Image 1 (spheres, rainbow, N blue to C red):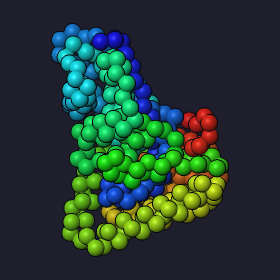
Image 2: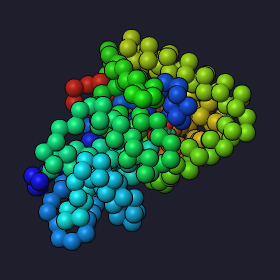
Image 3: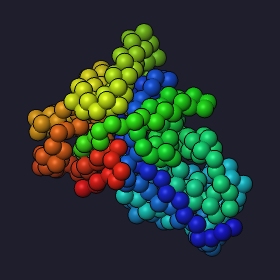
Image 4: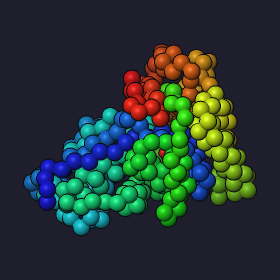
Length: 307
Ligand code: MEV
């Protein structure tokens, strides 16, 4: 074993299509400059995990994840000390579980002197993310692995198409501070879908139409058009029952501060929202005044800016 070893992976925002992507509809996502780093050192005795993320420290799943990743790579987890440092809020819908999965894989593969090809990172990342929620589409580990802006459709293997961002997308991400469980929101939608498949399948198809419009807007630099797709997607996310009052209030604040459009991002149920805006700092300020944490990201620029 080559110790110490480390691995890093990106956080993500889903621009359009969260939840319907679980049902094999396409979605758009982008990697964030912010991410998560895992360092593997020699420890003593059983596997130890140390983290600066309080929600992960109180959770048994990260240790299970490291054990499963080590098993998949054919190495022993006991005798290792794993240190996790993150600049992503946990439970916000910004892909911290997938970033953890991919960064753990990369760090353990480096320790084992193995090089994982892209297809292995995607497949193993999705298998590990399933420890956090039961039926992942794989879009979050794809963002953690690839970064950039891409269209994704689940499958074995998934279909991942990078998007050409002709004009950097000025995004504001805001987080109410109340974390939530993606697994619970995904399971709730599944129960509703099982109760009325025809209605839900129609809504899923409507979102797929917006994803096609949004991809065209990203590629042609039509930032206002992308905003309209955000608003329509939010309306459908509410109809799917995965939104929450605090998310809707952040969305309303972003719109009245001049955003072209705003919606929840990721699992929903109270996590983060994204807005696309001509003056993102003005929107971020209005959101911070409500007590939200914010981040401004210029998606598609060579260096994203975080604030
Ligand atoms: C979570 O970031 C995105 C969801 O669509 C779940 C998934 O795709 O696995 C809600």
